Image (tube, rainbow, N blue to C red):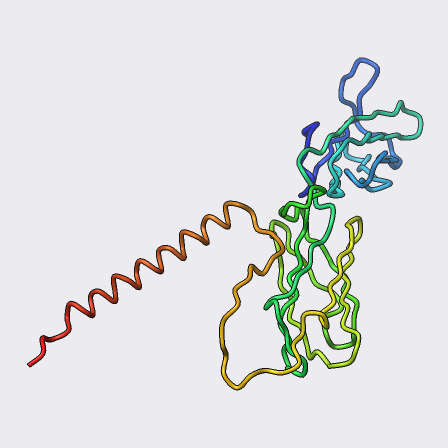
Length: 246
């Protein structure tokens, strides 16, 4: 197994029985006791039972990274034999906080569907970051306004959840929490309008997430530019095909 891991996925620990000359030998009957000095970096099962009746000399233990960068000491012990330990380091950044915003940026009272909540994992610096593992977010607020839980999938930079009806005059603060992450909240009533005009007078454009990675922003700009060029060329083609006046 590697001595350095990324703070996500799974890690397999190989435990081997050896004699005083460091020669592999069959496991004695009994269980292995395991411990991690920092389960937030890497969590291991507390016990493992290798098969001792068929000469098994090694056993594979599946460990789960906790998502935090740093180092941890893994210790393995068994009755009657010397214990062993190894230092494992998790490199790379991990989410430290939740970001939350509303799309669209202005919501309406009384609508069946008020909009979306956009949840995003953020690094300690406040920059957007991929979720190294699935993040289960617990949402609290007025009943029926937002789902109880939402999941940011592993590898995602944001997820949007549908909002329900926003009632005028009621508290509309939604909070989001997840284990080990700084919480976030938003007051929907502060973003709500109380009525709509008969005809729209303008449009509003906002990015759904609090922040987006630079690469995603560049791709979006290039896409918009390509669409504008296509529209211009299409308009010129129609103009060229217009018949002359009689």
